Every structure is written in structure tokens, then in C-alpha cells.
Amino acid sequence: MTDFTRRHALGLMAAAGAGLAAPALASNRKITIGALRFTSHAASFVALERGYFKDAGLDVELKFFQAAQPMAVAIASGDVDYAVTAVSGGLVSLADKGAVKVIGGALSEEAGIDGQKILVSDAAFQSGITSPAMLDGKSFGMSTAGSSFHYMGSKIAAKEGITLRFKPLQKVGAIIGALKSGQIDAWSIVPHIAKPLAGSGAVHIIGNVSDYIPDYQVTTTFTSAKNAKDERDMTAAFLAGFAKGGADFNAALVDKTSGESDAMIDLIHKYVYADKPREAAAKSIANGAMRVNEGAALNVASIQDQLEWFKSENLVPDVALETLIDTSYVKTI
Amino acid sequence: MSDPEKNDPPINRQITPQSAANTPSSPAMTPVRFRGGGFAPAPVRGVGILVFVLLIGGAEWGTRAGFITALTLPRPSDVFATLVELYRSGLLAEHMIPSLTRLIVGSLMGISIGVSVGVLIGLSSWFRAGLVPLVAALFPIPKIALLPLFVIWFGIDEGSKYALIAFGTFTPTVVATYGAVDNVDRTWVRMAQSFDHRWWSIVRGVILPAALPGILSGLRISLAIGIILLVAAEMLGAEYGIGAYILEAGSLYDLERLFAGVVILSALGVTVSFAIGLIERRVLRWRS
Image 1 (tube, each protein chain N blue to C red):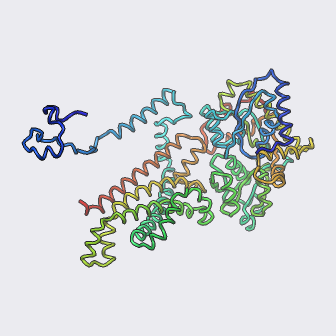
Image 2 (image 1 turned 120 degrees about the horizontal axis):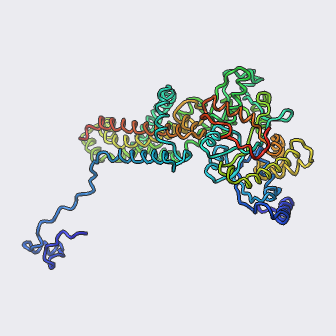
Image 3 (image 1 turned 180 degrees about the horizontal axis):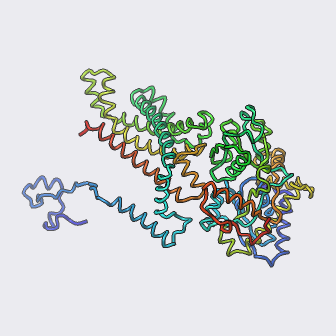
């Protein structure tokens, strides 16, 4: 971990420059950002590496988690200040208890851009299941009840008029194992996991989530209710840095307009698939590029739909939308 | 320390065995107070319940007064209401039946194989030499770590759950059983041998009954581990079951349901312990 690359040097120079150029802002507040080692968290990595948080006057430390749920609890306990995650039953429950608030949007499904995929096991595919409509009575993997997988599966089932049996398997790794070995029939997941899996032949892609949930707000940025209410400057600074990181990410890998996709992949590779060689990781990273909302804008209609679904399934108590989200920071869609 | 011989003349206070023996008529021979009472625990009624009442009452008061937030601890009365609701809706049975089936089938498999292997180890030098290291190697494996493997071996449905609980209860049972067999009084065995009893008759008539108290107290530990593993077993692919219910409540951060599930597991533990107590009293009547 001692190699000092050109990029590190550039980063240091940028950081030094930023420190000199922007003395007026919230002077180096120390904050902790929670992240998972997924491409979908890249906006935070970019903002940190390119000094966008520093520009906004924040001294950011990243804290890595294995799953979204402990991250939400860490926000509630005050160990982490900001994080990105899908809206889940647990998050809504924590919001209901006055612990967390959703303050902006992150990943979105968008027509024309590869989004989350619906997968089936090889055994199910060989038995003739080639479209989501044929999944009636089949088992569908999810981490836990009230997770985004549960939401997606239910939405697919509702639209196709079929019933799915949901199998809670706790962890993404366990779901992948169960799908590969044919213990469960179907699953849906972000493309950077779906495509390499399908490439291995053990599973098959049979549809897109965006066909069932258009404009799905997949992940959101959130923080403690206390930060959202009392630390407005700090929260606005975080969102500004995050949005800038997201914009770079979109330009490099989603719209491919900035022509720096290699540099972007190198940057993300430091955090994601760091144990894999660059070539193998590059494919997975580029595959996972879904759009990060411009300006961290929040799709309120999609959040509303997700919240209504959680309530209709009795997964969460009767929570008002305003309890879950704080729309005073970003544009809403 | 209080001095029991306070009233004696100071010159006689240091009594050596020699001086006591040599001067039988000395005033030091006053009767010695009985000191070997030991720490005899006496049953104190109601204190156990009082501790529970104080803890739960404190939590109730704290959550109502507001200095324990809803994020920290659920209100005990809400947990109770959740339990009542669970029972009314019929969901309690729906969660209990699969869990109890898994616990009973899994621990029956683990315990019956464990007792057999433990007795074999206790009786045969060959089995001891071959299996004790293996059991010692298997015991510390976190059984949860093997769950994904069990899913592949035994399927995602009931098979892997039975296997996990069986495996988890097997190793402590083996260790408790061969320990109990080892501790059987050798003079009893020698006596039976002197009376020219056959091998099988000694095993059945002397060793097994004498090892039973040790085996049964081992069962308490094995079954408690079985209950712990119930939650682990229901991590993968279980829609119903107390463990699945607790895990779901945890991921939804629904503390009332989480604690309701924990209360059910605790009650299950108390019931199992009570049942073993009954069995002990019945099969160990020969001791009194």
C-alpha cells in the first residue's frame, strides 16, 4: 500500500490547491461517510479522491460496511454521518423512530441505460423460463423482508399477475450462491453483478427491472435526523461534493462524454474489486454504471411508491412521507 | 475476623496440636465451635422474580418518562402487546411449529448420534484414539460458517436446517457423554466384573445408569446450543420460524417484534430446561 502513483500525486496537489484556494468555507469539518464496496457508491469515492469534499470544507473519512442495514444503524447511532443506500423497511423504521432522514437521490433507473437485471438460475432457464411472466410460483431471492429485492420482486409479480415465493437469504453472497446452485429460481440485481454472473453461464438474464419500475429511485443519500435539522451547512456541503462526484461519474461512464473512462475506472478500482486485476475489474465497473441523479436530486414519486408498498405489506408502521424525507436540500423530480 | 476464644486467658490462645495432646486437662480444651458449615445456598423465594420485575419495570418507566428513546429499547408493554397480537393472529403457531419441528428433529439426530459416539469413545480405546481428536477439531467450528455448504449438501429447505442443528448439538453431547462415562466409579465396574457379569450387562447395568447424570447435564448445554442455532438455521431460506421472525424484525429495525421473538426463545429455553429437570428426576430416582 505504499505505491505512490501519479494519480496520488495529482490528488495531493489538488487537495493542497483546494486548501489554499477555499479558506472561507466550513473549515475542515471532520465527517464520516459510510459506503459499500460497490460501483453504485462511486460518487462518494470520486468526490473524495478528486477533493470535491475538501473543496466544500469537509475532511471526509470513509467507513466501509458489508451490508446496507448495519450502515443505517451506524447513522442512527451517530457513528457515521452520511451514507448511500436503497430505501428499505429498516430505513423507514429508523426514520419513524426519528433517527434518520433521506436527503437526496443517488442511483436511478433510466430508460436507455442498462439498469438492474432480472436473473434466473440455469436450471430454471433450461426448464423453459425465459421471461419474467413465466415465474409464477417460483422462488425469488432477497436479502431480508423489506429489502429492495423484496420490493422489486413484488412489483414484477404484481405487473405480471403472478405470485412469487420470497426466500430470505440475508446476504448478497448467499443469494448468488443459491441462484448459481439452483436452490432459488430468480433474483434481480444491479448490472455490475448481474452481467458477470450471466457471463459465467450459471445464470441467465431474462428481463430488466426498468420495464416494471420505470424511473425507480434505486438508492438515496441519507443522514441522521439531527444532521438534517441542525447541521444544514455541513449537509449541504456533503451533498454538493457528492453531486460533483456523481456528475464526473455520469460523464465518464454513463454518458461517456468526458472521455476519461479509463481514469475513472482506475479511481473506482482502488475501492471496488481491489482484489481483482485491473482488466477484470474494469469490465465489472463499466457494467455497473447506472446514472447518479444530477445534483443528487430526489425522485419523490418513486420514494412515495416504495413507502406505500412497505406499508401495504405491513413491513413498516404508518409513516408519513415527510418523516422519511427532507426535501429542503435538493431538487425533487 | 472475630476471635471465637475471646474469653480465654491470653496465655492459652496459641494451641499447638502437641500442647493440646500433652495437657488434656488444660483449659484450652474447651469445646471448639463448629466452623465447617460451608457455603450452603438456601432457596430464597421470589428474589428471581423480583429481579425480572425491577428490570422490566425500570425499562417501562424509562421509556414512558422518555429518557430511554424508542431507538434504544422498546417499551415492555408494547412487546407484550406484540406477543398477544402474534398469538391472536395465529402467526405464533405458524412460526412455532416449523421452529419446534426443526429443533426436535435436528437435536434428536444430533443427540442420539452424539450419545452413541460418546459411549463408544468412553468404552473403547480404539474409538477414543480415533474420534477424540476429530471431535475436538469439529467442536470450535462456527456452525453458521458452514451454512452455505449445508445448503448445497442438504438443500435449502428443511434438510440444511436439521443438519445444522444436528451438527451443533452433536459435538457438545459427545464431549459430555464420554466425560460422564469416564467418571463412572471404577470400583463399581470392578465389583460387577468380580461378580462375573458379562460386558454388555456391565455397560447396561452399571456404566449407563451411572453416566446418566453427566449426560443429562450435557443435554442442557446441547439443547441451549440447539436453540441458538435455530436462529442461524433460519437465516437461509426460511419464511416461517421464530429465528426468521427475529431476523426479519432486526432487518426492519422493529424492536417490539425483535424482543417478542427473543422472549419466545427465552421461554423455549426455560421450557427445555424444565423438561430435562423432569426427566432427571424420573430416570435418576435410583440415586436417592
